[in-house]
Image 1 (spheres, rainbow, N blue to C red):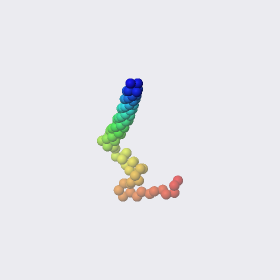
Image 2 (image 1 turned 60 degrees about the vertical axis):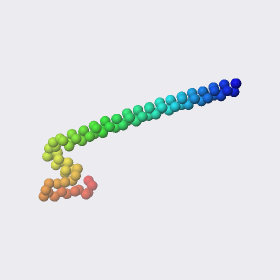
Image 3 (image 1 turned 90 degrees about the horizontal axis):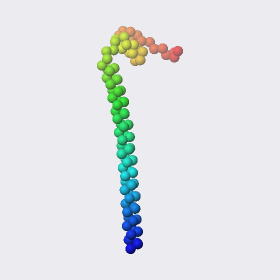
Image 4 (image 1 turned 180 degrees about the vertical axis):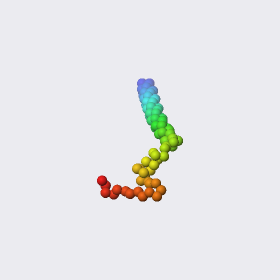
Length: 91
């Protein structure tokens, strides 16, 4: 009789222990999913801002002088018929 009672109490204790572990793990899983979701939403928002900025640049009307300046200074281009010299002295 005492042996049966002990076995029942042990089985109940094991069940309670397993239940507590399962609940704890589920809570951790939900917390991690929410954290990942928040991070992905932030990345999505940041990318949308970058995309909007790029769209604004593409859709804006750049004046000829600005385009020419970028072509000359950044890309090293010149006007048709113009000779472009590059300073190789390093000064």
